[in-house]
Amino acid sequence: MAKKLSGKALKIFETVVYSIAGAIALWGLTYIVLGLIANYGPIDNDLQQASENLAKLFKLGFFEWGIILFCIGMGIGILVLLIIANTVDKTNEKAARRAARLAKIEADMDATAKAE
Image (cartoon, rainbow, N blue to C red; front, side):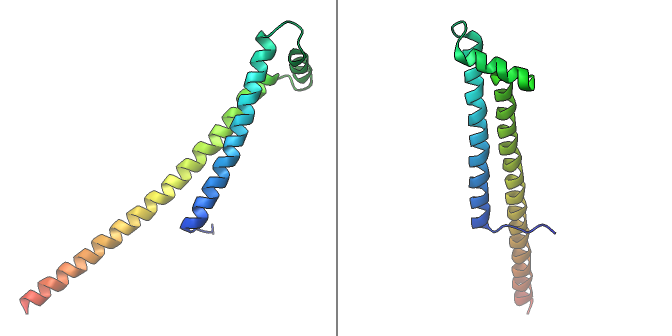
């Protein structure tokens, strides 16, 4: 069974994962900028040669790797956001049900006290 995180541990987990996702997205954004400079910068620059060498090795240059890394970072961030939002919603619904249950018990006790 999955271990449930407390409020403080959840905030720490959320902060760490958002930081990692942001770092991956920033890394991707850096590669995108390097790819744009390599493709549209001055002719025969070092970035263009590096991008071509990377493309020979992996079939993708800086720009394409940047898009992939940026999407991975954003995907991780969105996934964690959805998971945390779902957890918070469940907690809020549980608290609302508990409050409604207590209010009904108090109303029943008041009604019984008035009847006597």
